[in-house]
Amino acid sequence: MDIPTLNDFKALNAVRSDACVSIYLETTPLTQDIDASRIALGNLGREAIQQLEAAGRDKRIIGAIAEQLDDLAEDEEFWRLQAHSLAVLVTPDRIRTYRLANRLSPMAQVADRFHLKPLLRAITFPHAAMVLHISENAVRLVEVFADLPAQEVRVPNLPKDAASAVGKSTLNDRSHSRRIHGSEGQKVRLAQYARAVDAALRPVLAGRDLPLLLAASEPLAGIYRGVNSYPHLAETGITNSTDRTTEAELATLARPVLDKLYADDLDALKALFEQRSSDGRTATDVSDAARAATYGAVEALIVDIDEVMPGSVDEESGAVTFADAEDATTYGVIDEIAGRALTSGARVLGVRREDVPGGGSLAAILRFAV
Image (cartoon, rainbow, N blue to C red; front, side):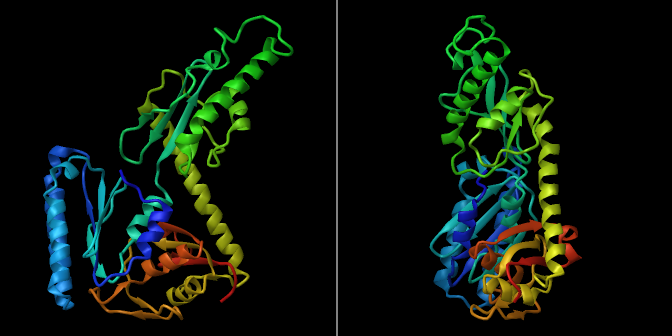
């Protein structure tokens, strides 16, 4: 998988070109079944080329885009490793691809900027996590993906177990050294162990923003939380795992925890939306939200991930001009609003329509009234 980061998204949102082609299609991790996806890319590519031709784009521009799409379709090594969806973003000068775990609806969009809203789902609720399984006898870091098998992550300098982390053959020795004896001494040794694990994880987790789920029992769970330095350690952990729990079983145990994290997160935003509504600091009208995003007034934005609303948004005033149909002279208005909100530091969530407060195309929480 090649899940875009927030910085990737912002960089893509800033791209402007005579022709930006955005293609999304379903793929499969099963290499023997990938030919259908390659055919789908060809069909969507031809659809995009037809849109460019209908808009009167220069033949050299069209040719450069078509050549890059053809090259990608013929790249055997590229198609050997796929996830469940593929995003292909092309300009005459460059092609970018993202292999995604979530399933996206097939589409081909052409404009002077990329259509990025389908990528929002991947960075909003990735349904992925890191799971740290730690006990006195073993420790491992497991990465859990949305629809792909979980896998253990190699962590240099990760202790094998608690005893070896503190230079002992066992934590149950009866020797006295200051306060290192009995149950109190064991807790001191476990704290040393937890700090060693945290130190080993720092370079591996640096720069990541996936939730870290702790699979541990007391007292080690509480001890590790006390020394943890990773900012995205989830408050809710996994309490019913053992040293013999497989990576696949850890992934299964992680699903309900992740679901609760995302549900609580969305519920908190909905509650904030209701609170701000009484202060006149929300917007559900597309035109109002576009103006607010242009002025940097959006604090958080929840958008319908599936809807495409063709049109354009004025660069300075944020005024929206709606179009009757999609073509190469328009772009997705909701997509543009989301991009402007992100650029000003807003949090943007791509959800299904039933999760948008008010049930419309979007719901914006504003920093100040506009």
